[in-house]
Amino acid sequence: MQLQFETGNTRCMQKVKSEVLTQEQTQELRLPDGMPDVGRVLSAWAQVLIRGKEWQSDTVGVSCGVMVWVLYAPEDGSQAQCVETWIPMTFKWDIPQTDVDGDILCHGLVRSVDARTVSGRKLMVRATASVMAQVWLPEQLTLYTPAGLPEDIQLLQKQEPISMAAEAGEKAFMLDEELSVPTSAPELEKLIRYSLQPEVREQKVLGDKVIFRGSTWLHILYRTQEGALSSWDFEIPFSQYAELQEQYDTEAQAQVMPLVTAMELDCMDGRLRLKAGLSGQYMIYKLCQIPVVEDAYSPDREVTVHTQELSVPAVSQRQSQRLRAEQTAPFGGSRVADVTFYPGFGHKQRKPQEVILEIPGHFQVLYYDTEGVLQSGITHWQEELSMELPEGSALDVVCGNSGKLQAVPTQESTMLRGEVLLDTGVYGMQQICTVTGLTVAEQTEKDPLRPSVILRKPGTKSLWELAKENGSTVQSIREANNLQQDPEKDQLLLIPVL
Image 1: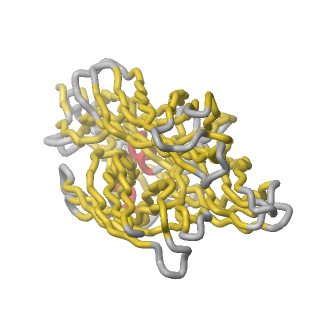
Image 2: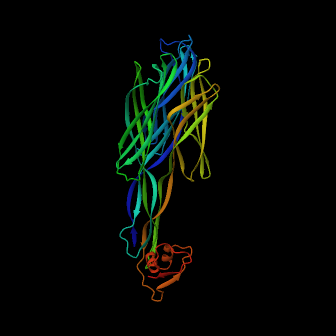
Image 3: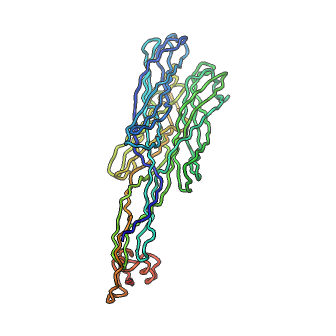
């Protein structure tokens, strides 16, 4: 007789792509009329903005761009001038052919930016950006549950706890803020350049909602009323929530990856008006108890078990941490005007059971030297981490800046300090063997000559193995020996033969 277990489904998501692509673009930038000719380039800055995502049957794409600011010293010796430009970029990843749309989580970082003089009226700008994309597909995981079995069938069952990705989404929101430099800072005359760095500090799942809170750091470089360059940081808090597709229990967790999609900062009469588009990309993780039947038998008849290997997309070792980035720059000066830090996604070197993760970055400093001349310099930083990584698993890494940067100059050098937000996760397919059905024979007549009780020491065998070998049940052995826990290996047990 064939006995098939009942089937049910639980929703999950499988990652089909996680890859960082890097692209370099150059653009010729002509100075607007009315601006003085270029004498020398002082510095350049950039920020990646994610404009959109595209899903096709066998590819996904991210359209983005890099906002670039170039500061130069005019040929006529007048005050430093800044021009800006937009460099569009498009990134594409190949994915397995699918008729179902999934979700794309991405993050962009500036790798480098520089500019050189082509002529007095032209600059050649070069920007390198990296975009990391995680591509997730929805899946229905089939689960098998025994039901309606004869009373004599004994089952070895357990619940296998597995953390898995349950759903992904995105919540877009806007910032519209009026700001002013405080009176304790040099008074603002003209805005030079700016950047935005959102940071999520709290994220949690409440029923059918994901809630996330944090701050966006607005960094500005400006010319003061005295004609010098100075910088300031504004912290702008935000709090958002998004509706989820299902109700989750208290063990569900969220991971939110913020994006900057648009930004515009206007300056009028010393006051700033910020309009920015942000997006909170989220992934929800749930702890799923997978029902597993490991074995089956009957004391009264022959039973053949039918098993199946389940491939479950599991997530383990998710971790968020802050790395302190400190570096002594080999240049000093009387005053630091501006500091920028550009982290990278990191290089992974696989070793047996672990991975060596190298996180690169570089500080870019704009400063006045001891003679009061505006200079710029770059110094590199790197951190190396060792992380456990089981065979067949993959490590994902997302990096970003955190908060304000510090620069402490001396006559000979400058100590630079910052923080890197590092989110890591280990992903892989976990194989689970489970019984999905049984073939049972007719019940046989009991042998009147067989003993009703067997005396035996368990040794290394479990109660399940003893019961199966001797035509008993685990419950009968526990009751006959008044067992509250597993027996010692040398304990003499009464095994009732049923």
